[in-house]
Image (tube, rainbow, N blue to C red):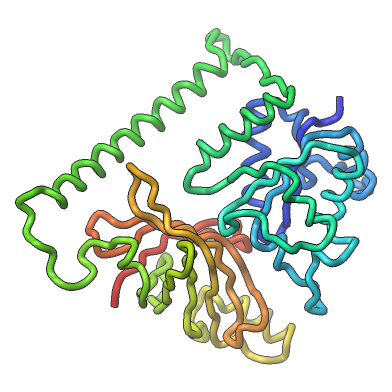
Length: 346
């Protein structure tokens, strides 16, 4: 039976979310119900034929709207969404032609589908969109599951284990989520105690400076430390409608051992040395009740001149327990891994 769920995404910054989404949907509805090109294209098969066959079966198209869906450019500098052969464009157009159900998913860095898009993307506004955010994945994923069930997809029955214990997969899942729930509860309790301590009636006024970070305290210069790399300054700017912008001055990398191989590659590719990099990004400030203040930013990494993108990813960081810094993870699409990052005031 053809897959009922088709996931469309931009490889540059969507492969991690697409893979995680396919894995969890496969657990809920069965792997055979989910089509993800990198997992389901057979060796030697025609990409266009296989994708066209899957979309022709009128599945539900989950269109992951990441920043690179709209901003990616080809080698000539033209927007890829303007190219009729762009894979994401072809998949969306095929879904429309097949009268498939479409659910756009706004991922980190995309607050809502942009306006004034070229055809066929100008049709995105015809469909109710949902969110798929790293920091609220569980709630967003459950909403998507409910939408798919409303469209007639049936969750599969849990299967028993083969170890003879007679314990079904539901028990394993329940135990896993019990452990997660206990961990979340412990974190929530600690956060609540810290909040009460910081906000007791007898707490003296805070001294000048960024002792306790608030939304208003985010703009300005921060010193970022990523894993074991040398610290570097970056700037956060809070703009209209709560948009958070990240920029950095050129960061020297000519003496960083971790960049040695890429510097050699860059020199062979361009004939010029790569001595610095710059970060750019846009995102949001997360001020949901009951959770720590946090930032979530879709970032891009450029060469020092700022004219060639090297990498992209996601930065998610919470206010640290000391109230002086932001502590989180920096996900790299190029490395397909994340690194710890800490932001402190200079």
